[in-house]
Length: 121
Image (cartoon, rainbow, N blue to C red; front, side, top):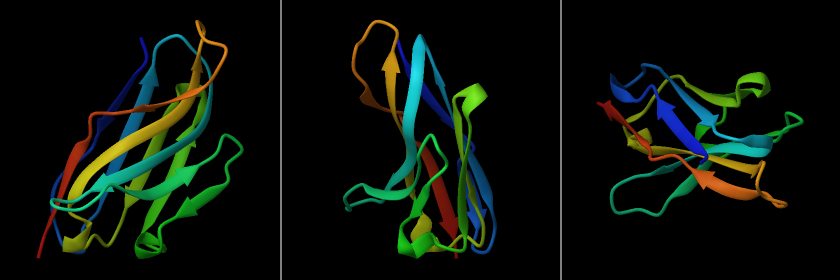
């Protein structure tokens, strides 16, 4: 059974920083895209940043220059370094990965359970 487990969320003051981690475990053959999404209260889930297995990266405009996504392919882990945090960054952050298990011919998308990030003004 594949699991994605996030860590690193918490409460921080505006201008502060946090580093999120997400480790994928299980009988995994390969991982394609990995990413971070967030959902604020009363809003739809939105993509924050994505990174392909080859290292191509995309960010939502609101975090460009402040957030950095990276991954460690050997450890099936993706990171999100968040600097200069703003109150509007407050949300539950979810890890996402498109991967293939040993028992499957195809890749599918998996989600973590989320980690709360709260930025106080």
